[in-house]
Image (cartoon, rainbow, N blue to C red; front, side, top):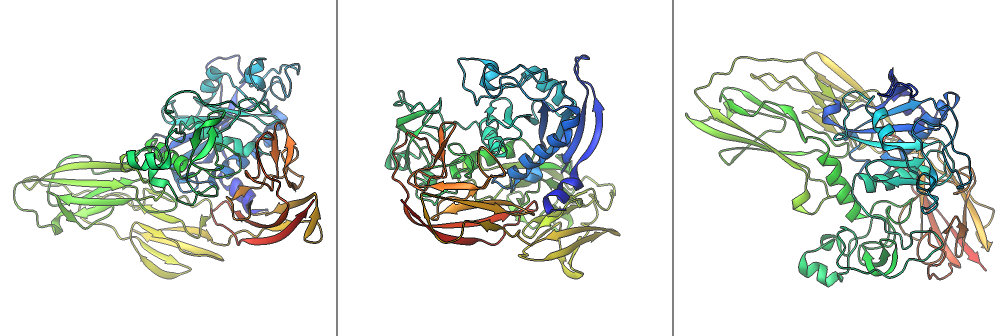
Length: 582
């Protein structure tokens, strides 16, 4: 069993079967794919399946796992996956497939969510627009207990191998296309991030025209020059000149909003322009902001109000996988030492009333705009005349889930009860050796499997630390010089492969757009498929519009490749050098 399969098996737990509000609709079962905390304190991703018959439910779960695993391999989802609960709602469809797939004259299917290409079989739409019946989607999402429109995001997967998806109130994607798992994060960029498309076309094979209008409302499109952005402190001025997460620098690149000229975007190719690349810094900052806004950074602790000076005061925070949140305590503006708790008895509080404040801030480097940096504050009035009754609590109330391996660089946490008279120590050990005390432990392991334990109040929790990055195998034809084209197949049984060409941005490996089991094909100008050219070694990136002006990429190229596993570890980077001849 691969690491991916083991990870999935540990997390898939069916929690119930229910019928939506309209009794004539098929019943559905809700399965926990990932649960990191209470529904009310998490952003809940609800994945619905449409057009999967009862016999095809294993296919639906495989599609769900591929989509979710891809999501966790991309930032900022990778660092903030602990902010998400994920539920799969499986519905046995009367018929297999979705409407108008792939053409308008294709049969209509009897499916619970009425998903269909061409914007729901609209001849004036485009084929790739895969829509869903919103009311039906909401009814089935309501079957996940505690979720509401305010604390969830719907992702509807259609049982199809045709490329397509949509973003808006909900996100949709075809479940089985080679590129389908990359459609989901792009559509979440729309639905969750409010990001716009950076395409220079609307209908494929039809070049977009010139942009007409004033300064776009879009945060990642502009008419301004870099100098004007800096002078006006506008748009992405804080990121200008940085190496883009999707390759090249953050700067000013023409095209976007379905037009070719007259409007500019931050990077040459990012998630919102080309599937397979990462969000650039501008999109990543917005996604970090929006994900954080969906959860309470302060999840619990001592309720705000009037308290005595003879006690321990507590806060509970969210726990990103990649780093700690900062907690700053002040008493009448003077900083106190403490993280999850402070003992006021050690502060020597003078008689009278005072103001105690705890501020939680996310120090993530993904955010540079102070106005959108995630933060939360709680304030108490400390009255020395108030006597605090003793209070205890259980040894452990929450922790990093122990059901799946943690990564070699994860921050693992334990939350104890909240006694008013003491701060219970949490003692950590790595492979049986004492490793420190505190409410969390930041791992820094680059290889091998380890055993991490945390002990407090007579309770011991144990995690498997998977610090081995997955190995990746590349298969290319013999030799290093190729005429016209060459192929590359990447395999990583325990991870998700990605590659980059000549130092450009890392690009997810998905096989080939028409067949996920086929190798990737490189040519000097790309191979046109469904209105896009894939495998382009010329200017413009790996995937380009066929009408774009680009130079053919003959000559020498260096291809690097690696993989990311389910625990977030990045495997070793390897490379090959090839020469493409006319």
